[in-house]
Image (cartoon, rainbow, N blue to C red; front, side):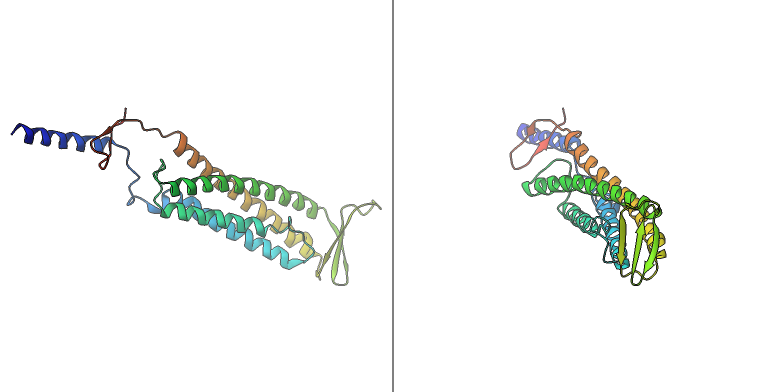
Length: 224
């Protein structure tokens, strides 16, 4: 009789400890808002937008350099978002429970930081070229557009854009695309920074310490 009462008491105590233990987020509450699904979705959308605008810029003239048409940056950020979807699919929790989850989380954190750096670089290049093209003085030369920054300076650098039939495309449309790239990459940099910060916060600002109660097969943790 005493043994039965003791077993019942142990079960109640174990249930109480499990209720106090840290549990993953409720999967039925706003699935889209759960990390990293929303961050990865925004990264994918912005990465596709950056890539699309870059190819539109490249269609204006084949003379544009890779730093002026950052399709490579958009593709890299799309890959970062795909890794975020993988992390979500393996059930994201703050503390690592499997080596696979730890590796994916580490890769996602590193790639978010790389994405942040890439977005800042692209934004800097786009801002530089936006200011440059806004000051261009261009002349049509058959199937090319020849532009300079200062027509009075005989030593001024000349920019030649092949395959352009109207210089208004360079001083108008291309300038607008550079401005769009600035805003897209600014948003992408902020999203990557938020993703990296949340990863860091979950890893280093959520601590649970306690003693294991019960058999090794049934882990029950008590916060202390």
